[in-house]
Image 1 (tube, rainbow, N blue to C red):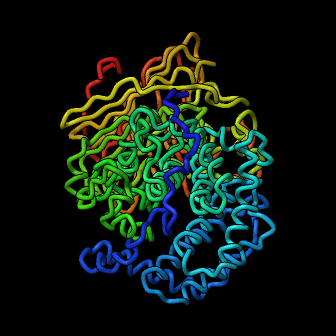
Image 2 (cartoon, helix red, strand yellow):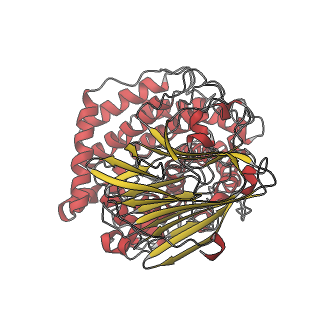
Length: 617
């Protein structure tokens, strides 16, 4: 666990409270500036058009019901209410039309009368508190006194009461103040927005929540140290950031300060993390239980302004398919939205700002690295490679796994998560490791002496020992020995982009005290045709092809297998079937140690790659 600074928690965090509304993320005058902004800025114009269109659709939709379809989570409902509140509140503030206000009230009135906000799964409670806080604050002067009272009472009853019990050290449901993953930021962030919204009406509870949140947040934010990466993967980075950034922004707009939170180590660089995790096919390197999709992230605009990262703004604007009301709020020139250091010029970031970034980056905070041929060419080659701690949040036994993009396709992919409601899916001491997608055999890595135990040590840490780069090549080497200590003295894996950074070389070096059974796996959606000698394979998809060549050892052969468990492990019911995938494999039943080398060449390039030990990479 990374050690990082704690925050100086103030005894009176509300001492500088600005009492007028709005004060969460926006200030008076912000909404009036949005239409003029959209008239002069093309991105803002597209955002406004999309937000307006979505608000019109919401007007015709029924209010959100209380429903827990999986028996555990109200989360889909909470998130729907958050989305609707932002769209309806912004459109009422901008247009003054009461139909948006009335529809927003209908949504709030229904959710306020829920029996609870499902505190047994506290993310649901935190997100609903977020929705009610924004509605109370942004529309404060439009509500009647009775409506304000009703919103306040709902926040206090359904949000503050279970939240304060957790801060008091007596959690009835979830001990989120001591969580080390995204639950920490989401729960602290949602409750803190509620506290800032009601601060003048509920000062004691609000102050207690803010003190608790500021004391709690470093337990999770230490994972950003030193360089802004996130060991739960890019999509959980997005979820954590979706609450960390609004909390930072709201502290500034409501209190004029964030008590040093935005100076926390790693935050200034964290806007680079999603940029590097996205491959040229617009798919993420989706380690740690994440999907491949790149999420909509308006917070990138805030990060761009706060930390002078024009590439972060450019990245957000490139993903212009979906929009969020906060895109508009954070485009408005108002330094109070960002804090004392507002680099407004960073919003002008364009593709050149991304192209100026180095092609490769190692995030020590997550022990992942990505390398690529170039930026902004969808046919570029790209590799994401991980040595993530198996004890990280949303852990997978995936040390050494990789993804590979080339020719506009993903050739080596990582599965999305399986069903979170599978029995024991989050039981990291036992049942989680019974599912194919959580195990090493379900990833693009090695399995040594498969049996009825987890196929990597669930407690193992790993490290990327070196990253090297030239204009024509890039390489990274990881020490995975802890993960395979049950069977091997040393296991190291290197991945390299070679031949002008177009082809991918995967090289393993294994030292053993006695022979072992070894499997090498790579999952793909491509069709695979093996060569006659078993030493090569042709992968094809979407009219493109990549050749896989087994360079070392000479007595090994490639084979194609279904994406299914080995016979040594049972197949639990209800887990994903993975019928749309297959895996390229190497099986060595009595491996005595040494080196495995596999070369993936886009377009059937015929290449010769000199053999060198990983210590010479």
